[in-house]
Length: 324
Ligand code: NAD
Image: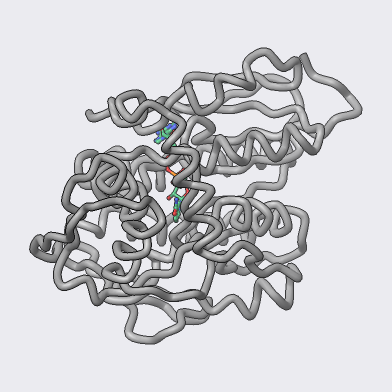
């Protein structure tokens, strides 16, 4: 039931990793939250605790189809999209559709409701970057017809159409370029490095590293990421902005760190490097510091400890069942 004193926000991708944490944050800030998700990669278990609340509502819906929400809306957060390579390589067309048609639908909804919309972009718009760290004025190095192009180009289109709605219709828009983020509720079998390594370490299986493991990534803990997104939504920053943790680490070091933190006896084994896998990834967060007064507060070790604690408490089979 809509409460006139509360701001009302639609969050797409609500049953996913980031979307479910965003729902928690906006509920905690006393918003009326409407979650929307088609559950293609998400899981209702991530938001099951919200269903009993009077200020939470959920629509099971594919945002690539027409989106209708009765009543007023103040904000839209568009986070629906497969996000891990394992997922978007399996459902390439849906990935392109949710970034293009889905974003178009939500921009139209934002315009009709005169709502502010924030769209979730990604560091993948930089592709396999030729500069490091990546700042927002770097235009990227993406192979549009490579296997990863379905995600990277969907997100590049998403940014372009969002900026076009801002320029052509004066729509109140925000664009966040999210760098690798980790924490509770990631699917253990979604192919991303941290949940995969944690699951393998907890099970005592070999940790599988692509290539020699010298490729680097920088990992942001979920609470820091949510705070950055929250600040961006309430800022005046129209240009895309990087939110991530610049603390860079090689995947080999990451695997060793996770083996140590879990106290596992796992060994490391190597697999061939996937096509177009970026060799390095590190955000320049100068703009986020200057515009949002934001920087990550939780270092990787603490974030990993919190994440490992979460996975140790949950029966592994309940977190890894989903494979489509
Ligand atoms: P996720 O897979 O956990 O969540 C995505 C959610 O979107 C899922 O619940 C899925 O069912 C839903 N969804 C997908 N297509 C949909 C559609 N057509 N209609 C309705 N719902 C749909 O992924 P995540 O890690 O939470 O990522 C969320 C967003 O953040 C994505 O847009 C992703 O591109 C972006 N992002 C995430 C990261 C990261 O490190 N997690 C990094 C960069 C960008």
